[in-house]
Image (cartoon, rainbow over the protein chains, first blue to last red):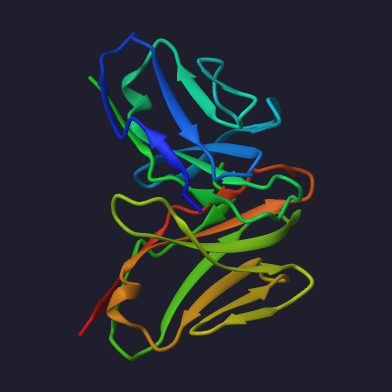
Length: 114
Length: 114
């Protein structure tokens, strides 16, 4: 099976712009979770989607949003970018049937905000 | 509010010896714990998990120990191999959080020397 893919792998944006990141889950997986990784902070949970519905969300401002399509692909959008949004954004997919389903991560999108 | 803490940012160990990685948590609602390994430019890869009904789980060279009263878990790697050089994250999930949300520690960089 192909793994989780994320595009693009690298992005450079300026403050105030918006950005959209994409995640394609493993075939058959219906759950996609998004995380932000910054140095010293580990991975911070953003939100989780299952069957096009957001089931769970973390403590991030409303500038961070996401959606999921009928083929389980997911996008994450960040509007009005701030310098502090520079991070590695990881998505993870799982079957989504159980809370303890193993999450399989993509390689991430490295976002740099100048 | 960092509910999962890995207080050692780095660990150096000789090949063939034991690596012990530690993780502390503060949320007594956590009932499922995992360890992930991450190589540069790749997403985290699942290593091993443990449910709060157990105090030990083994998988080959990897053993996770859980001490619920101390809110502490550890990962033992025996024997350590050069390919084990990576960043290790512990993560936890609470029943109340559910769906795709794991709280991660900041990670421990392990370097295995010949």
